[in-house]
Length: 623
Figure: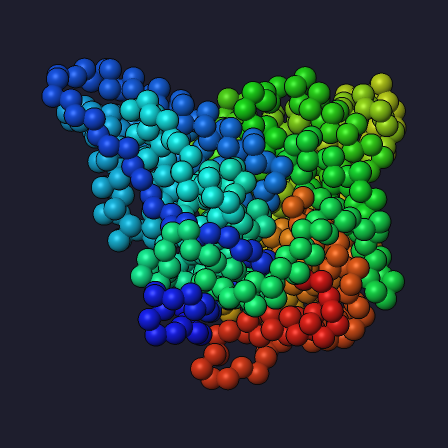
């Protein structure tokens, strides 16, 4: 961090301190400082003999309570978080559901430890692992959070709201804060800003903070010598600046901006059309029926991505045929005449295969050799968790048949039974896989043709472009699919062979990399040349600056998180797109090498960001 202004003897007067950090989530906020300090329940002294079976029961009961607690956390926040944030939270469920986690705890109990002590032994074991194992380094704080919660449940203690939260609003200060703790504090509706020591834009907490639209600064290490609890703070994340004890003149400067932001939060435009009259279609990403109430706004064209696996992971939702039909019918009815694109079950990427194992018998698709099938281990980012069973992606044959049939049946029962059924297939890497899916869809359609002879005419098939290999087969897939969705999250990960969850992402390898932008630009042009309807979804569409880059590369359909709709709509309506397209034309023609000073030779993406920010400032684009 860099202190821009600090007067000598600052702790004895009210002179403001100005600190420059790094923006993680844009916005402006003011509130009282509150230092986050992780607290742990204390071991209750017990010198009495204990039963191993009783201690195991304590562990099992605590895990069950924790499972319900995490399920409630997921369902409560499914409407406001982006897909990537929900996947991050789902890590907790994966750990809890992993039998290895329970067995490890049992081993320590069998060696003479109490249930509480077993959790402490696991924590110490993890502490040793993080120095030598990169995987557990990224999971360490997630595990610490779960172990802490387990101790509370073992002790049967209640976690009370911090007394400081009687003061509102709060700007939370933390060296590290796990995503679940951020949501825990957020539920009190008093956090307006976040200051982190971590500077990673790809950390779990950073991604969740963006989803919640919490102005967040990183690379700031505040001590209580510099800032104390309940001290007045102002965050201007738009210019990466933190003000400690801001002067009245500073507060006045930002009050109008803050008021304007609040007043316009529900000011949805009627349409999304650029300043030079280019129509942009705006869709939402959704996880459950309750997300769809936002479709009442005329600027939204429909649902560009409905994640069925998240719907089926929610508590008390069954995966059987009749339950799925009812769920999908409700979604069709809620959306009305606006289209919904349903992504079929995606467990190859971030989801735990074991969550569905009872519903997914191991049967393989016809005419595909077992050796050629993708194993879940190839793509999972949760290798040590989600791939314990070594299950094969296409072994979900029976479940996929059930899901397709349920989608078709639900449409026939909906209030608009003759409208389209949009089915989006994830994780396609080869044409043979697409043809296999197509055969399943056609076969399932035959079951319903006696009731609705035209049902297959209503089916529109699309694929997610997220594995680079399939982009070499656009000519072939154009004869099969009706639309595609470019999934920028996974496409970026596989393009650079990087770990989006880790904190080791380099600035020259992020989504504004000239190489990656050039790749997307060529891909969009190729898809349009084949007249394939093309959506873009992923975290890029949720950020106004990144969405600007996508539009300049030819994207005309964006599917965005519910929480990002308003800011993306405002950006579109204030954007002179033709000018921006000329500005970004070098990226349309292929990867562009920017001139970068030698000392910053690995920061090409930073310069792209500066280019876009300068354009937005010059032409008054709302970002």
